[in-house]
Length: 186
Image 1: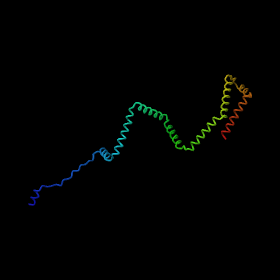
Image 2: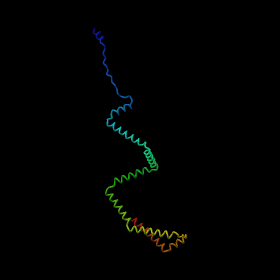
Image 3: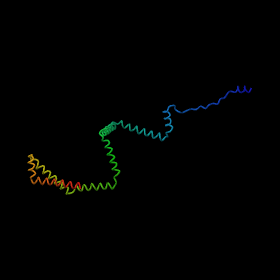
Image 4: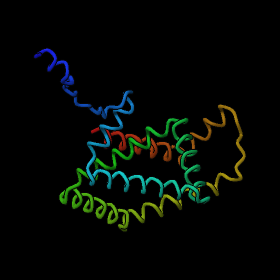
């Protein structure tokens, strides 16, 4: 009977819980799901703002003037690169930045004093008289030699050298060159 009682009892099997798997099957979908779950509201807000700014820049490129300016700048940049001036330009910018970084009040004061002394020297009466005298001498030499016809030959050159004015001029030029060399090399 006990067997009949057990046979009369319906067999109850333990129900297995049904598990819903929320995992995508391919790796791209899993990557998208992970990114979506990892993002916070502030991250979404920043991404939306960045996208908005990018679209605003793209919208400005629709303006014909802006587009022409961009094309011109790119053409000039390409030309600078082609002739090798782009490296020079960046070197110049680096030098300017270095000089700006290195400039102190003391250096600026010294440069100002140097330029002030140059202006004072160039504006002095002695330099003015020297320049005026040199200009007058050159104008006189041009006037005197403008209509002179060269006689040619070695003998005429020797006869020119026998004149006291020519000898004094040559002595002056030789003395000037020697004194310049002394001052520059000493």
